[in-house]
Image 1 (tube, rainbow, N blue to C red):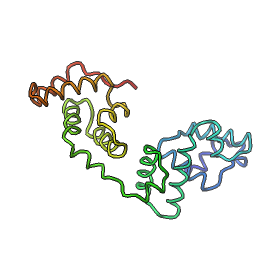
Image 2: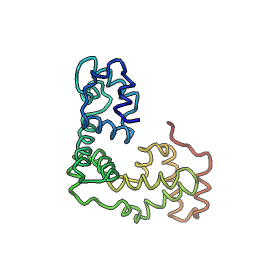
Image 3: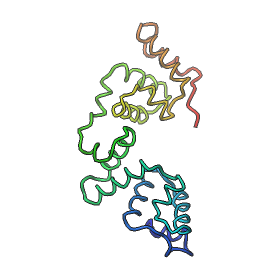
Image 4: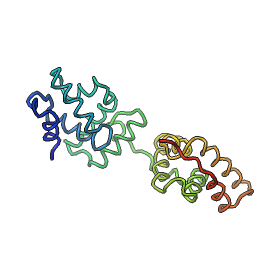
Length: 205
């Protein structure tokens, strides 16, 4: 089922009143794919659009479903996709980086960004991440996502994990203490892992 069909089902009795051109629908599809909005959000905005006779995207802004910065970036991403300047995966990557760094889509697209893998060369970054993975507190995927965030936002790995809600601030404090003992030789790696596994405190949802 296409997005247009979904929108019509949402407001079947008022389908002719939905004020959205193909570009706007593509922007909404992009936002849905990025999980920045939900189907329920789209339904709410569609009703608002029909009721007040305003464009669908304007309705999403009016109801604060999406922020202006996110909408602008999504529109720029769809424009680039329409002109075939980027692939979908590249558009998603640029959107995420631009949103995190407070840049425009074109600014990120035109610059050579640092490779996320460069962060993993920092032993202090990888040591605490490896400890958390070995202790089964976080997954390899969560660690790599945090390393990517560090590359783009110039932040410490622990901050990235807490911001992503992979771990709690309390657990980060414990991990830093364990890392310090590992660094000075009080713990070996296995002892450090065991210490992290004792009453782990995970981030709450």
